[in-house]
Length: 95
Image (cartoon, rainbow, N blue to C red):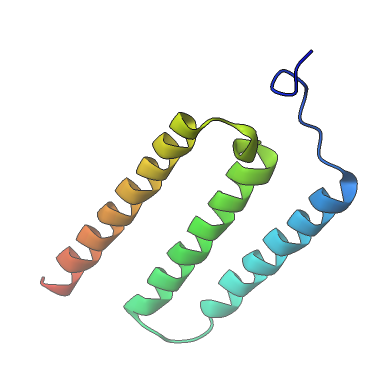
């Protein structure tokens, strides 16, 4: 069995740290909504959600162990997500 074929098992310490980071980001998102930043509140919440999505993809879905092609495809999805959010904000701004 080669290294590429071996299962990717994360230790509990790493998963615990990831859990704490995700909880911190969740509570940060909740706190951001208490400030009146108008449209920037949604932007900050979406940015935090993007970071949380990246963490989940990297650690829980083991994307860091995958090949370059899959990483590029997932990155393309994030770029598409960012473009859609930017277009939505421009639409909201110029109404």
